[in-house]
Length: 168
Image 1 (cartoon, rainbow, N blue to C red):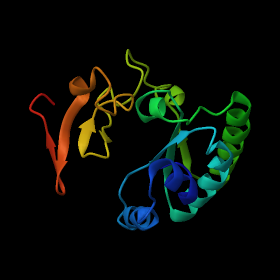
Image 2 (cartoon, rainbow, N blue to C red):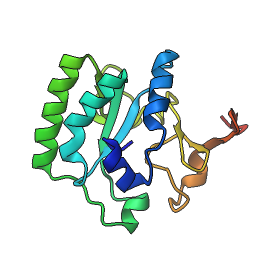
Image 3 (cartoon, rainbow, N blue to C red):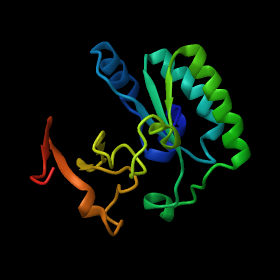
């Protein structure tokens, strides 16, 4: 989710039902986190989004800076400047501490458990559900235009069921 609904609508197409779904996850004590990509378009809204998500009961926010790959290669979306990232991430950290909400970033994820892999998904600790229902084991591999896409697809959603490939 790309920060507040208005920005998410612009970048992703629709936020219809997201707040309701987040409240449902919280009410049912489901362990989850919000994943957001910071861009030049949404970086100034990140601190406000942390306040909004905390108010909804979101326990954790995983944020990353935009990497120019996937849909970003076919759009005008650009990474945020280092100055904007520093200023807004600093504010978001201060807000998160006050609101008791965890912030997650790939550079912080494995501090206590370093390994040979860059991300926790490659270590088998998480999966990424893609918009088309496929399940990837790496957040860097999220579309068919990635040359190694098939190697990272570990399953798919069928209705409300998750079906994993035999090699998982």
